[in-house]
Amino acid sequence: MYHLENSQQGEKYNTIFSKTTPAQRRRRNARSRWRSRALLGLYLFLMILPIYWLINMSLQTNSEILGSMTLWPQNLTFDNYIGIFTNSSWYMGYVNSMLYVAMNMFITICVALPAAYAFSRYRFIGDKHLFFWLLTNLMAPPAVFLLPYFQLYYSVGLFDTHIAVALAHCLFNIPLAIWILEGFMSSVPKEIDETAYIDGYSFPRFFIKIFIPMIRSGIGVTLFFLFMFSWVELLLARTLTATSAQPIGMIMTRTSTASGIDWGTLAAAGVLTIVPGILVVYFVRNHIAKGFALGRT
Amino acid sequence: MNNKVQNNRAWLLVLPMLVLVAFSALIPLMTVVNYSVQDVLGPNARFFTGTEWFESILNDSALRAAFVRQILFSLTILAIQVPLGIGIALIMPKRGWQASAVLILITLPLLIPWNVVGSIWQIFTRGDIGLMGWGLREIGINYNITRNAGDAWATIILMDVWHWTPLVAMLCYSGLRSIPEAYYQAARIDRASKWAVFRYIQLPKLTNVLVIAVLLRFMHSFMIYAEPFVLTGGGPGSSTTFLSQSLATMAIGQQDLGPSAAFSIIYFLVILLVSWVFYTTIMHMQKDKNPHGGA
Image (tube, rainbow over all chains, first blue to last red; front, side, top):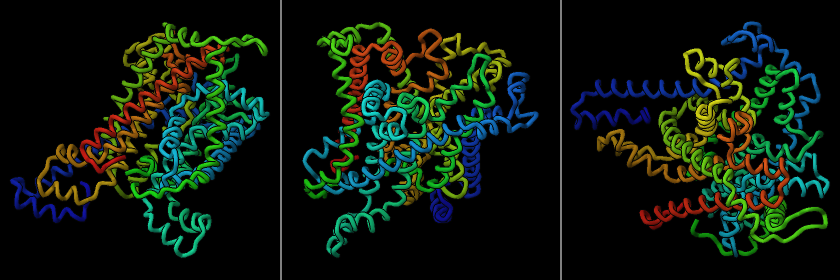
């Protein structure tokens, strides 16, 4: 089950020591493989179900949604999506979200790369305490920072700008990025640094020309996580914006009006918030498992 | 990890990060501390109150109930998500296009904005238009999350399991993939049972990632806000009001600066304390087993 190329060898040992014949064993392996496939399929099916329902609703008109129970759209309509893409107050929400996420990713990776390098290569006064303090920021509930953030950004005149949200998300994204990058960097042998310095590379040149290309996949995975956490967080983003930088998640609440909830549009907007995530995860699919382990396996 | 060079100039590399994090973490935190010991009545009227706010928060029975609820919630989802995540990681395909497809599908719930997760489940569980709510009603179960506290609880836990089990599964999956093939071959030669392979090869390899998984899941579940807020709004009554929501109501809704600041500090310290105790305990256990090992 774990591999194919070695099964011949395993078979040999099994025939020497085992009472069961190879045929029986193969049959048993095949059966257990089918059982695990079936279980996995069941899990994936249950997992997809709520998302399927959202997509299903986004392709229906409101009268069909509220009318009878249908497992798939009877009269397929794309009106909900067209409505979103033709109304600037709707699609600007996506632009706003993308903008602050991109800003946050850029700022975070720029300051996290050198810092992670310092943590993975050097001992310096207070390094352990600093690292622990960084991680405590991951544990700070965003709700704790709501009010002070509002006051801070209001007083420096950044309220309702994209950069305010980007900076606020640095609170948890910088520690996370340093944590992940440090794991990836520590798996690069130290000898590479030393050889480069002996060859006369200066630190910045070595860092940009040699070291960063070596941890490319680690940086990709880190960017994925920065995207993910900045994209899904809305409590801070909502508090720090009013109209001109409002994220899509906040605009979605507009669908509930006095005349009831516009279910179709709500569902379509929800589906559209999932799409960027799928695109991004597709690019890092080969490294993503290691990234989830923060580079430490 | 152990052959690091002593070099205090490394501080220069850390400095830009430090400035940024200090701006987004230290200044707000100082504001919170400042508020927690004062009574602000107006721009020029503030009084030092000492520990008065802290005492009133610790004696608040509604907050105590929210705290107990929060602990219950975190323990429940950990008890479900960790075994389930390990199980899924064990049956995930290891290579080929199926591995990529399953990976992408599994991470899907993690990439959905948190309030959209709430919306998805709100729609999904509605009795009139939601598949699950409608289905349960059709088979004769009286299911209503706006009236029945038990239903609301079950739905929130189901939602969180749906939302976050993928994280545990992905962590375990990467842990499993780092096990060298030779280990499995040795086990086959010894004719080890599946359980023995899991107990003595796979589980020890998973310890590191499981520590990360439990820590992350505990922290996130303890801060949960948007999903239950959208799904149940904390109701029925206050049966699903967790700590974050109590805090947000107090700070933004009622503008009680002093008490909410004191509450923030206690809240933060509880998360810190639990994470720290958990982390050091695990690290000590590992050190006893393996004197050269570490995280």
